[in-house]
Image 1 (cartoon, rainbow, N blue to C red):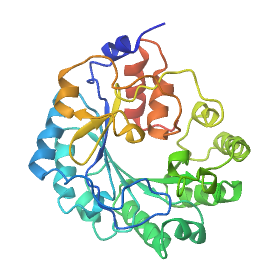
Image 2: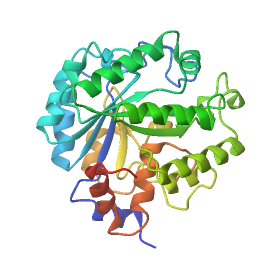
Image 3: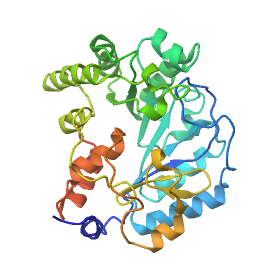
Length: 320
């Protein structure tokens, strides 16, 4: 079988870290009931100059995708400068946001390639999870992005409370109306409230029924950005080894690089990661359901030539 090191060599045309998800700030304007973010910032956000130098280093190493995450990235005042820099560097950018501040700051992110807005269901369900009035503000943000000509994607976290076909149908209709796409991933045990994942994580039966329904919607042409392989992985983890720390990575607000947000404690300085093109940052792991990571894993597979093909596919912006 082809080794992960061989896959890394196959991806060198793009650099080891083809995609970086950057938590540009620890701060957030919401207090979602399921959030893993600590109540108080653990580290000071890196300065604009520090982040700019970091982005240029990754661009020189071949990074193609840059995702602005948080916290809530729109609370960072200099986000506009970072978005402009990423565009200048030729990166394909995504803003992952709760949408609350988006309508007010739409001019600051006009150069972003895609906006990903969290909407978890009806206004009642969404506000119960994220706070009163958040749904309406997210919809205003979605409207602002579409009006500005920015590609929009509705992102749903599947909880025990919203794992229902009619809720997915409503969000798909919302995406179609706004000429947006729809993406989703299940909540994981780490998101459980007070250490009790049963309060929020969907059951296997719920996931099986929902995945079956989503696959049927895809056959009907619904704009769903979730591959059939990924949907199957919800209940049947694939044998494909995780490439987090190899093709993609999680950069925290202090510019420490980890394989992914669920393994944020396994971090090194980003310069160390770029300077040493060795094996991945962590042992093989197939436990999570993080959509953006697993789609890359499943596309790349274990063939030597597949890593670059996967990145080419993602660059094209086509639906999975």
